[in-house]
Structures are given as structure tokens and as C-alpha cells.
Amino acid sequence: MRPHIPVLLDEVIQALAVKEGGRYIDGTLGAGGHAEAILRAAAPNGKLLGLDGDPEALAIARETLREFGERAILVRSNFNEIKNAAAAHHFIPADGVLLDLGLSSMQLANRARGFSFLSDSLDMRMDDRMELTALKIINEWDEQELADLIFEYGEERQSRKIARWIVANRPLKSAQELASVIERAVGRHGKIHPATKTFQALRIVVNNELENLELALPQLADVIGEGGRAAIITFHSLEDRIVKQFFKSNGQWRNLTKHPIKPTYQQTRENARARSAKLRVAQRL
Ligand SMILES: C[S@@+](CC[C@H](N)C(=O)[O-])C[C@H]1O[C@@H](n2cnc3c(N)ncnc32)[C@H](O)[C@@H]1O
Image (cartoon, protein in one colour):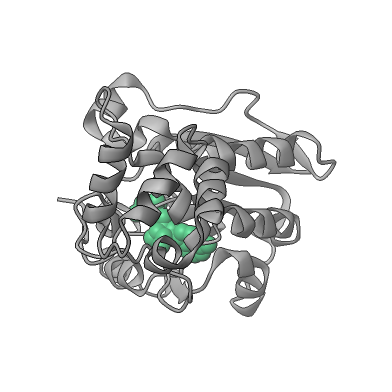
């Protein structure tokens, strides 16, 4: 079984209009599922440059993509450095770039990493070279800072109450403890765990997710050649808004998705992670 089911796989291959012999960059390699499909569609000579900040993801992708030999070049890099990485590996001009944002299933499943409500830790870094952890934020930031973070990046209306309960129950050592404090603070209504938005907020801040996206988008016009495509999959409204705005009002791009492409009912049944996915596509003019 795949460690991570790639979201909107056929749609991404179509969106990028992958062609034989093309050069593609996957800025969020993960387990390499999308990368593998791109390399197959670009056979026999097409190449792929894959980036990921997480060495565990790179190790898995290396196995997945072994059969492609030198057609796949995998590098540990933040995609906020996409232009430098592309230049260093002679991928300019590229025919297409994919960003499939967010977490992989391997990261979510690994209890030592702190991303899931069941985790024994509270780290949440996708790249362990970064300094800030969720543990530090939860135990060291003051109540007002916590409330602001939870409100701004989680769009959580009960942010103040949650921040108050966190501070009153410190120190918190694991994601499990944090999730349970939040559940006690706001109660449980419906299927969605009441800590979902707070966890999203922490992950965004720990990993500079919005800033990385804002840094990467303007670099794409220097990386992708004329007629090439950018395909970006987002998983929450904050990042989707950034992508939508960027392609809407930009003379270097033709927006190919007036409305984002979303998974079918069947796809969400087979892969719960796909539920909130939105794919936006643009063509370099
Ligand atoms: C949703 S997964 C990608 C899954 C992949 N498309 C597949 O088919 O397996 C996102 C990956 O992007 C990585 N990532 C997230 N933000 C990143 C960034 N700013 N720079 C580099 N990698 C990043 C994460 O470590 C994770 O492995």
C-alpha cells in the first residue's frame, strides 16, 4: 500500500499537460506519488526535480522513484528557494511546477512528530532544521499571543477561551494533552475534533506555511518557461486565497481555473485527506 495517496492525481497530470521529454519540478515531493505519475507521463526522457524539506519524505520518495534513475533528481530544500534549486539543477525553463501543500500521511501518522491528536510529542516541524516548535509556542507564548495565533491562522472563534485554558494547564507535553485541554475548554460538537483549527494554526506558524507560499509564487514566473504550467493544491482557505489572488491579477499568468478543481465524491471516499483539496492551475504567458 502507498504511504500517501496522491490527491487529484489524474487532474494534476492533465493540469500540467505533461509531455514526453518535459522538465517538471515537484516542490512538495512527499512520498513521490505525483512525481512518479509525472515521470511516467513524460517518458522516456522527461525529467523531474523533486524538493522536500523533510528528510523522511525524501528517503521514501527515493525508493518510490528508484526505477527512474537519473531522470529524478531529489533535493532537500524548502520550496521558498525554488528558483535557486531549479537554477542549480538546470531546470530553467521548466515545463511545469507542482505544489501539493500541507502534510503527508506519513507525517500525520508518525506519533513522534506531533501533528495528530494522538501524538506523544508536540513538535510539528516538517523540517527539523527549523527552530520553532509547537511545544515552545504552547508553553512559552503569552495568552494574548496564543489567542491571536489561533484566531488568525485557525480562524477559530473560540480562540480566547482556548488560549486561557492552555495557559491554565501548562506545561503541556504532547499533542494528545493539548487536544484534550481544548476539548475540555470548548466541548465536542459533531464529527470534527474541536482542536482541528488550533492544530492547523500551530502547524502554519511552526512551518511558516503562508510566508513560504508567498515567497515561492513570484519565483515561478522566472522558473517556468512560456506556455508552461503551475499547478497548486491547497487544503485550507488561507492558502487558497493567496494562490487565487496571485494568479487572478498577474499579467505574467493566464488563470486556467476560474473555479478550483475539487475531488469527486468517490475520491473523497477513498481518501479522506482529499476532502478539502482545491487545485488551481495557471499558464505562463
Ligand atoms: C501533501 S505532501 C506531498 C505529497 C506528494 N504530492 C505525494 O504524492 O506523495 C506535502 C509535502 O511537502 C513538504 N513541504 C511542505 N512545505 C514545504 C516547503 N515549504 N518546502 C519543501 N517541502 C515542503 C512536506 O514535508 C510534505 O512531505
